[in-house]
Image (cartoon, rainbow, N blue to C red; front, top):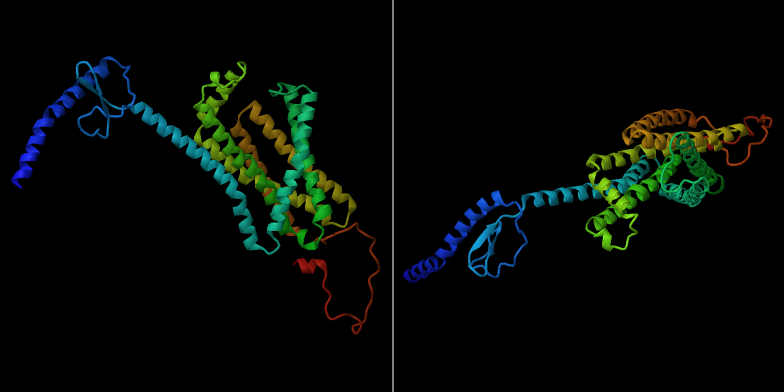
Length: 380
């Protein structure tokens, strides 16, 4: 025990000067930081220290004089790093939520009704992808023909261009939905109200997954790489560097709630897609040929109206007003869904062109079968 006390006392004597030197250096650092704001804060490896480094700060040693100055870490850089990590987390969370929302909708529908199969969900996904195979090239070709490439037009041309974008989206997507019912979904089980809900969920859900989920994740990765890249040495065209810098600044300066609002918008958009799917379904739930054309046209106009207003209001005013329009459109869509839900069971499912009605057969009680099942009763 006495030997241990002697060793500890000797150790304190040898390192006491180092401790005092650290305290004096700390006092010099405090006074120096007040006078000289530019301080070298590069992290040293600490090999020249006489003792282990403390948890905060470091000691800058002058090799000639042997004196050192104790430096604190930059609190501003720590706050900036923390804020950057929070921004990355919010953007990543937004992409994950957008990718999960469609499956939550599909799971709830599948749990509530047996007609809501995952096959209808997948059919809705493929319907959207096929429609975009024709929709996107068509928009690019027409935009190049009318001279709209990098920026949106202004004045009356903006109104016309917004209407064009809305109509192209409505025509391609709703027509593809119509042909999906016409060519593939021909059985009575796939032409029910509940199956249409699952079909629309898949159609709007894959849009959410591709645009906000996967698209948002790719954009986040690209913006992180560009943020820490020297654009002048990255072989970018000189005229494009200011545009890239502006895009980076706008992306990281966007408030956090704007990304979460995009997820809420996806919920509303899925409901609207479900409504338009039910509208197209009515083309095959009526015995009148004229109603088929009008219901498809109604779905196209409903789709085109929303997209046209969203584009026009977002560019001319702001995105928050466009979100308000989406909310109002969703409320109207819910009312349409409620109307079709009440009247769906009273309509006969038609899988082919309607035929002329024939005279009912007057069968006696002995000639009548024990039980006659109609398609309407089966669907019930």
